Amino acid sequence: MKTCFVANTGEEAQTVFGQDFYRQSQPKTQPELDERVQLGAFLRTFALSAVCQFPIVATISPREKRPDFKVTFGSTEVGIETSKIANSELEQIRTVQRQKKLGTIEISSLLRPQAKRSLTKKIEDCTGIPVFIFPVQNQALHEDTFWIEKAQEIITRKASIAKKPTFSRYGASWLLLWDKMSGDEELEPRIQALATWLAPFWKIDFFEKIIIQQQHSEQFFILSRQGIEIIEKPTVIPDTEFSLPEDIASSIEGQ
Image 1 (tube, rainbow, N blue to C red):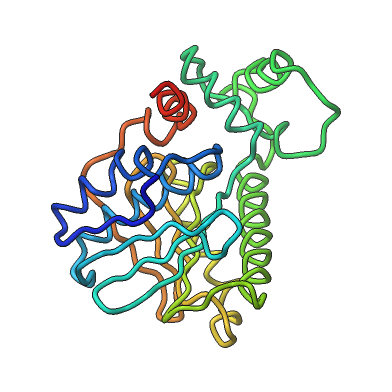
Image 2: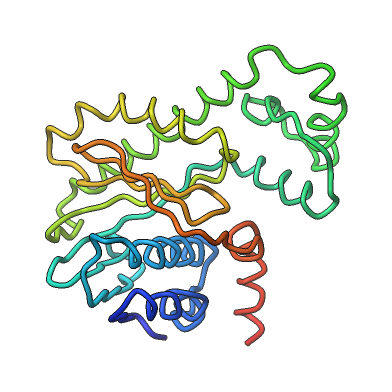
């Protein structure tokens, strides 16, 4: 199992932190795979930015250690902790939506407490009434609120972990979040609301950067005490890489 990966140029990073990054590191669990796919996408994009220093040396931490990764950019060591802004039922329904080419889904029923339901019932609740004919009142507002609360919950939990003596501190600590819920036009206004909530945190011992990835693209919103920066690559990552990481897991297991 390989745990250290090095790229000396932006072009080299596109290969080093592509599929080889998570195949050669041999993740044992789905969360480990997700983390490496996620970090690989960020490093491929960040490597092409004007501020990135080389070489990039990414080291995968042992499973029991935090943060998840240590990444050196030139001479600067950065600890990177990862997580997702996600809803497992929504991910499940969207996978079926892609596979069966379902139309627009109404997701409000997935974002409130429900009795346990079968997958068939969940799909029925999400597609039974055409959304464009009978939209649920304030659906967009409800989804925004759910997303922001989920993001706040994750950031608060990760900040608590980062304060523990077992959390290794490097020159800087970054939190990398993979947004698995927002559509193309939904994320930016949610980021603005989250940035307002984060304002007091930059004044205390906290992550220097919180980086949020748009779910199916190599676009990243970087939040810090300096404000919000957006970095992105012009190409979109194939759905098989970011929408269906379980396919990657299956191929790894088959090797």
